[in-house]
Image (tube, rainbow, N blue to C red; front, side, top):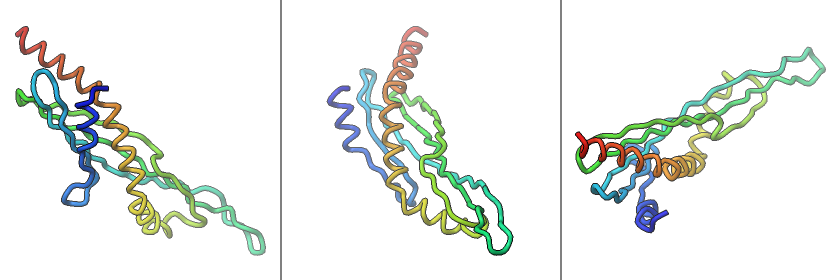
Amino acid sequence: MSMMLMAGLMLGTLAGSDGAIEHRVQLDHHSGPVAVRYSADIGVSHKQVGAVAPGGRASTLRCQWSANVTVHREARASAGAMLRRSAARDGVIEGSRPGWCSAHRDAIAQEVAQRRDAVKAHLQAVAQEDHPVLRAEIDRLHSETRAG
């Protein structure tokens, strides 16, 4: 990995002005600088498991939940082309609570909000994995415009 790419990663920002989770970097490419914005959408899924037990017996009723993250990339190449891509991953944050899911939705949403660091770390990892893909897309775009 080039030193310029590492410097770009170090300078990336993580939080947008509206509280959204995002990561911005500028990649150096032989065709010119590329401004890249990665943003995360979080969706929480709930799964009711177990059963309510009759009186005097322990209930096995639980709500298993999972925070799924979709990372969106928008890169603007120096020639003005916009390169977009999205990558989704289930189970970035997971948990379980006793009882009915409907009773815990607000608490689960708060827990996900409190664990933004895990989402930020995932966002940065996806961004780092995407850089070689993005470079290849820009190379391809650059070679097509020179050939055409």
